[in-house]
Length: 324
Image 1: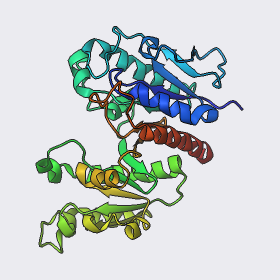
Image 2 (image 1 turned 60 degrees about the vertical axis):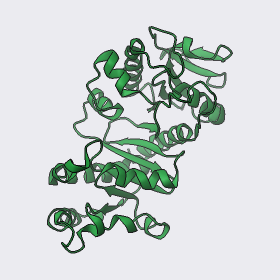
Image 3 (image 1 turned 60 degrees about the horizontal axis):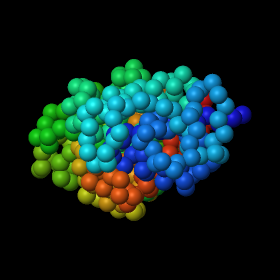
């Protein structure tokens, strides 16, 4: 059986997305068939590529397979162009559509620039994750950051730290845990996922001496889910959760806010982390970095995260096949 290709969207063409994809393609080669959703005028002049359409068989051994997306302007590295944002959106929409139709195996997205999208298209979504949830009709999705030594989920993401305690609700907590549990089973082949919950307050409230959220709210929610058969523990003091011995005892750490989750994984593997969206009907990954306008076009961008994002998507696709 012919292996379906993985869709790769170009992201903002003024950033490093295409650059790191081409480096990843060079390393991975024919191992994982891929189709780049981009505009040919944004590719290097000497690049060997073939235009790809769903109805024509493609030899993925002969360079890059390109699904042509028309952008308004030639991209200038490092310079955001609002007139090109409609093309960025079209690339995501078309790649997602073909993946949902079963013509792509999954989706890996290069970074977008949200401020530029808002300037050019009045983009109303918080980012890639929310936009893809909308395109797929998913009510709730979860962002997981993963690398070979750690996987983390931030329960709350881009909100002020002062709003975190109010944002942590029983419904959000339970829904997030269930999506994590199902996602690790279906997308990573872990039969009984072990979820380690970080406390909100220092020392997980230290028996009520440092706040009461962990004792009055998070601990009872964990107990409820344990009674339902989930392998979940906590809340634990976050400052003791991420050393080597502690990490061996769980598959994913559920953290209460953005930095509590992202600081440890970026410390352990700054260049190799991957953003995974759990809860979508399709597989979706992304490199865990932004457009990097400051170094775009200089040939110095590190492609490790894109390489890992492509390989992680491929592993997830195989895990879903086995789960089904």
